[in-house]
Image (cartoon, rainbow, N blue to C red; front, side, top):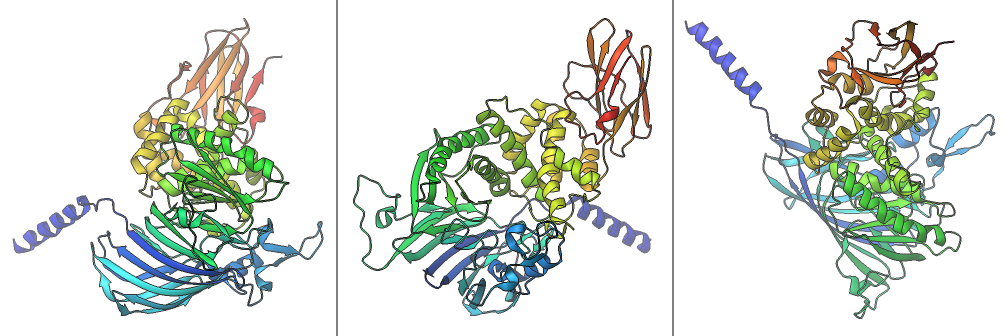
Length: 609
C-alpha cells in the first residue's frame, strides 16, 4: 500500500508540473551611458550603468555581453569565416584574382592596429563590488559574485573603451560614401536570456537578438559633427544642427565638443552616426512621427535624398495601416553603413547617386518585424527578413508603381535557382551557419517572403491581412517564434497549418504537381514533389466557359474563402487525385495565380489539340 501511495504521489506531482507551464516572461535592461569620442583617433571611452531585471523563473549565475567590434580583428571568428566560405560577402573581401577566376582575401586580415575595431572592458562591478569576467572574442563572460534570483534587479557599473574599425561591415569609420562614423554595435551589450536560455552568439556578420529596455545615452563629440540615430534628443537648444526649435535661441557650450543627450524608451538597441558634412532635413508624417534625414552635402545625391522623404512618409503610413501603428515619435534615415541596415528608430543607408527608395522601404519595414515584434533573428532570420521583404514589396507596388499592393510570384526566381542548384538549406539553420551566403540570402529573404505569399494561396488574401495585424497586436514587444505566426494564422482562418510550417521552413521538400491525364470530362492530377498543397484548378470547357475548382488538403481541416467549386479534399498519402467536370474540357491549368511555388510548371497546363 505504501509503495502504491508513493507511486500515486510521484505521478500526481508529474501531472501538476506538466500542466503548470511557466507564463510568458522577458528580461529587461536599463542603460545609462556616457561616451567621449575622439574623431581624430576614432577611439572612445565610456561608462555604462546597466540595471538588469531578471524576470525569468531561473536563478542566473553568469551573464554575457556582446563586444561586437572585436570581430574586426585579424584571426577573429568573422575573419576566419570570410576565409573559409566559398561565396564571401564582396564588401568584406578584396579580389586579388581575376573576374573570371576570383581569389578573395579577407579585408579584416589586413587591418593594422590603428584600423582594427575593439571593445575593452576596463572594470565591471555588480552592485558596487568588483566581479570576475573574461573576454572570448566578441563575448564577455561574467561570473557573478552572487546569483541573480527570479524577480531580482542588479546594477552593473562598467568602464570601457573602444576603437571604431575601418568600415568593413555595417559599422565603422569612413565608409565608401565618406561618412565619418557609422556607430552600430558599438557598446558592450547584454546578451538575451529567454525561455531557450542564453543567446551569447559570437559575431560572425549576420543577425541579432536583443533585450528590450530604456537607453539614456550622452555622446560627447566635436561640435561641428551632426549626430543622428536612435532616441529623442533631450537638449536640442544646446545642440542646434537642425534639431532646435527655430523660434528659440540656441545656446551652445564654449568648448570644442557638444554633449548630445538622447533618451530611447523600450528599444532593443541604440545606434548612431555622425559626420561634419551632414545635411539634416525633417519631414512630418501625417498623424505620425517626425522623420529625420541626414545625408552628405554632395550635389550628386541631394536630389534623391530629397525625393525619398515624402515617399518614406507614405511607406510609414502604409505599414502602420497594414501591420499596426508605429509606436515611437521619431524615425531617422541616415547615410552610413554599407547598403541598408535596420536599427531601433533609425536605419543606415548608403548611396544616393541612384534612387535609394527601395532600400529605405525595406529597412523601414524592419522596424515592425525586427524592432517591435523582434523575433530571434539569429535563429529565425526568415521570420524578419522574409516578412520585411513581403510587406515592403507590397508597399513598393502600391506607392511607387500605382499597383494594387497585392502579393505576386515576381520574387520567386531566386528560390527556384537554389533548388535547381541543389544548394538550398532548411530555414531552421542558424543564420551564421548556412554553408553559403547565397543559401542564407535566398532562404531568409525570398523563401521567407514566400511563406506569406503562399499563405495567401492557402488561406486567402483577406485572412493573411488579418493575420499580420493580429500577429502584430498579439506579439509586439514579445519576441514571437515561428509557431506564433502559424497559430495566429490558424486562429484567423480556422485552417490547420502545422504541416505548412513544417514542410516550408523545417525541410527542403519541394512542390511539384502535374496534370497526369484528361479524358472527356475527367481530370487526373498527380503529386510529384514531396510537399503537399491545396490545389486550385481552372478548367475551360469546349463551349468557352470557365470554372474554377479548389481541392483542399485534408490536413488543413478547412478551406479558404473562395468562389471556386470546392471538391473533396486530397489526403497526403495518395499521389493521384481524380475529379469529374459537368462538361467537355478544352484546357486545364493548375494554380493560375502562380503563388504556389511549383518547381516545374511545364506540367501544370493541358490543352486539347
